[in-house]
Image (cartoon, rainbow, N blue to C red; front, side, top):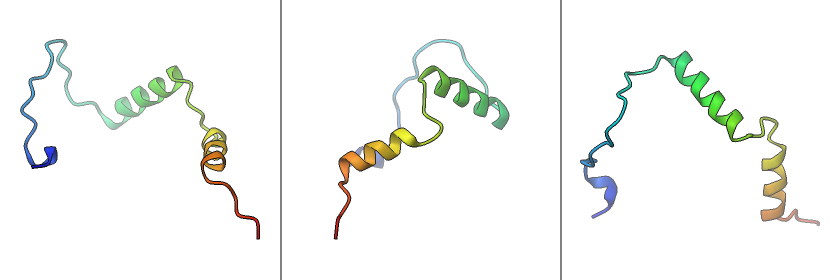
Length: 59
């Protein structure tokens, strides 16, 4: 049986309970996390990685 077939019954860790975030609040939290992780917004790092993984075909 795959793990996706069962409902998640794991207990959440105790701590501060948070309510549902608005879309704006969730967006701001995402942007802040991306800044902290120094995410590349241009996509240049992704393009470089793809070129390394998938070599270009020369015909």
